[in-house]
Amino acid sequence: MTLKFDNRYARLGDKFSVPLMPDPLPDPELVIVNKDALEEIGLDNISNQDLIEFFSGNRIPAGSEPLAMVYSGHQFGGYSPQLGDGRGLLIGQVISKSGSLVDLHLKGAGKTPFSRMGDGRAVLRSCIREFLASEALHHLGIPTTRALGVSTSVEPVRRETIEKASMLMRYSESHIRFGSFEYFFYTEQHNELKELCDYTIENHFPEAENAENKYDALLLLAAEKTASLIAQWQAFGFAHGVMNTDNMSIIGQTFDYGPYGFMEQYDPYYICNHSDDRGRYAFNRQPLIGHWNVQALAQALSPLTSKNVVKGALDTYQDRFLNRYHALMIEKLGLTENGPDDKALYDDLLDLMEGYGVDYTLFFRALSNFQSDDTMSSFTMSRSCADAFEPWLKRYKNRLLMEKSDDVKRKKSMRRVNPKYILRNYLAQIAIQQSEIGYHNDLHTLYNVLKRPYDEQPEYDDYAKEPPEWGRNLQISCSS
Ligand code: AMP
Ligand code: MG
Image 1 (tube, rainbow, N blue to C red):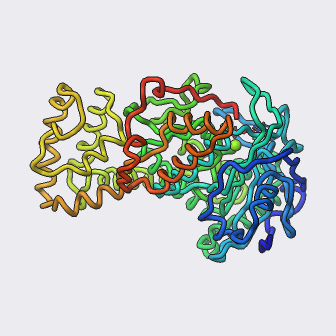
Image 2 (cartoon, helix red, strand yellow):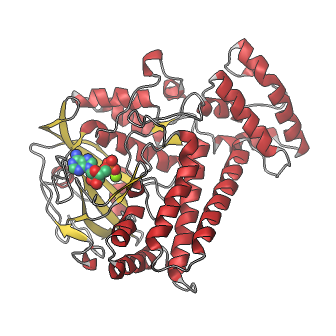
Image 3 (spheres, rainbow, N blue to C red):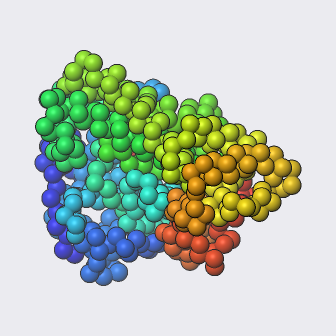
């Protein structure tokens, strides 16, 4: 294994992390690998055996300096003073083929000083869920941490039932969270807070360097990235499920997948996390929670920032969110010019979808194939539903006329933003059940389909359908 390491985070010193070796999985088996990414990371010439050993914590490449990062965070609104990597390790930072610095992070790598009551392990189900979701979001074009591979073992782990200890190797430009800054703020370690900010600016936001106050600039940039990310979640119908500040990436990537879900029938009140009984992280609250989280970040950076920047950051967040969401929804409708009633056009459509329980992804995909002389009956909808949508369709047709929309061009561009394939919960569930008994074919097929979400792939039409009765409203708990 010849990886080029440059472990900059480790060099920040012992206030920021604890050096620690992974606790290896016994008799590991490789479940799935992201082969496309191996080359980018510099792992293309690795043997299968070395890969298994690396992804299961049995062998650590020369040059790595594994460590557990410290952080804290607001969980469901309350402050938890000491979190940190309780079961994941930053194995090291490697220089990728393209020259960027990439964190390799092994999740499920055993107990750390931050494990609290936990066992330091991850189960196969949750590793597969994170693998699939991060790759699905990436191929949709949504910023996210990525997945390199999953390994599993016969080591028993107790959750609601006995499951198999497994590991996920993920990679990202950064594992710094809003909660990383909160930790140093609330422990009043302001020198370290400044060091962490300087590190973040140098490595992730070099454009902030020349600002009058670079910490103000850092906050504004993070607010912007976060808003932009959440606008994409809303436009694609993705619910994260646990938007605690320790799960918010400072570089605005989707981070730490737990009980997430893609919305199927449009329901703004959708709660994907079975344990979130108050719906704090319901789908339609995500934009607001992003705002709340930016405020928490602003508080953490307050020893370094100027007085009036908080309002500026919150305004930036709001403006960026509204603009990006609007632009995405307009794009989903295939409109290229701005019309005065466009917001009402998609808001009313969403109301109709909610009223009739229409599948969000399928509707927009069907609309992408719509010809201006079609009627509602060309959609796969019940008669009463089609009748109810008819007046809206009339408005839509008029709106297309207004900008002299060209059917062929519009359909092409709409199919590039309205996916045919999303990660439906029941599809993940089938793949997981098969993998748990040792058959990984379903998982591999699903992963391949999700790599091309905008392509027709007619041989996989079944993966684009609405879930069967048993697959609706599957309950996903927080345990992982
Ligand atoms: P999460 O809900 O996955 O974002 O985790 C919240 C915190 O709990 C983080 O500090 C995790 O490292 C920690 N944690 C979650 N599961 C475990 C586990 N099985 N063992 C130890 N720590 C864990
Ligand atoms: Mg987390």
